[in-house]
Structure formats: structure tokens, C-alpha cells
Length: 226
Image (cartoon, rainbow, N blue to C red; front, side, top):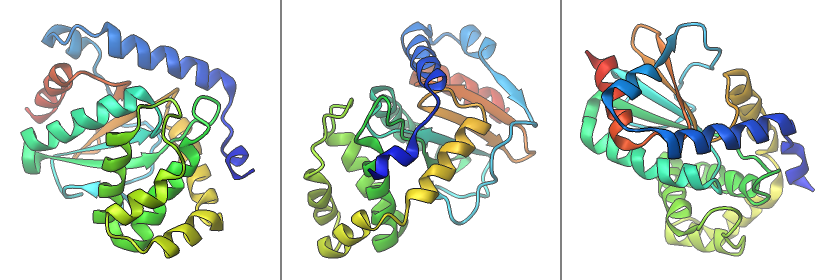
């Protein structure tokens, strides 16, 4: 099956679940706690943001948040809404890049959903990509709750040609792209999802592990924007 090509080492899956859960449930949201969790450097190995990325906002901004995510991860669903609020709050100072990191050992349907978002981008550009992605996170209850039969329906909802979408979905042409994205996430230090890196204009990179609550994430961004 196509999804088997996205396999990830089990140790990363287990560690990722612990990391995401610990941060989501354990963060106090206080400025002191958020600053203590700030891991910053320049040697994090992550591909540069280019015009090929799916981005909300401008690449030429003060902070770019690159998120590696899995559409059936419950923490990712929460963090997706957090990121939308971050963009509303920070305007032109922050941009958001979404990259694929489906974990099939935890979420067997996530890989096909990742392909579906890429097909949306192919057929309708970044506007369609983000509309499609938003809709997945809106309707899924996470943990493989989204019926695959909904994928073409979502395509229709965001204005895509359903026949062309289905042909893309079954073609397998995004398998290598997503496999590469997974490898890049792991190389950048990802142990689970969501895993995000904030890239400043001077090249400094700051790790955001897990689904940071809005309050503590704002503290970190405010610190970086000073």
C-alpha cells in the first residue's frame, strides 16, 4: 500500500507522543516558563523557506514559523487554531509555513490526507491548499476519525475539479515529496507532531515542541521580536 512508504522509526513515534502530550498538558503558559523553554540557535538543520512552500504571509518578514504537522494528530488540530490566532494577532510580523509530517504508525489515514492537501495545491494553488487544510482540521475529530470518502467532498467544497482531484489522489506522485518532508522533519529534530521552528531574519532558529498554548507561544514570539 502507498501509506507503507511513509513508515517512521517507532522510537520517534513513542517519543513524539510523550513530547507533544507533556508540552500540551504541562505548560503553565507563564512568561517565565515560556522563556525557560526557549531553545534557540543557528545550527538546526532545516531546509530554507522557498516559493515552493505553503505559506501564509510573506517569506520576507520578521519571523517565519515552519510547522511539521499530521492532519490526524489531535495536538496538531489544536495548534492549527493557535497558529491562525497568531497570524491574526501579529499581522505582517509573522508568517506560517506548513510542511508534511504524517505518522502512519499512529494515524493510518494521515498520509492520504497529506497527499490530498498537495493535490489541492496542485489544482488550486496555495489558496486551495490552505482552504483544504483548514477544512480537514475543522471536520476531523483526529486519530483517524475522518472518513476517506470525505476527501473528494472537501475538494468540491473548496472549488476544485473533483475528477482531477481523484486522479491526483490515486496517482502516487506525491509519495516521494511527502517521504522527503518526513525525513527533513526528523533531521531537523522532530520527535512528533506538531513540531515547529521559528526562523528569524538573522537566521536564528527557535524550536517550538508540541502544541504550545497561545499564551506561552506569544511570550516566545514577543521575546524574539524585541
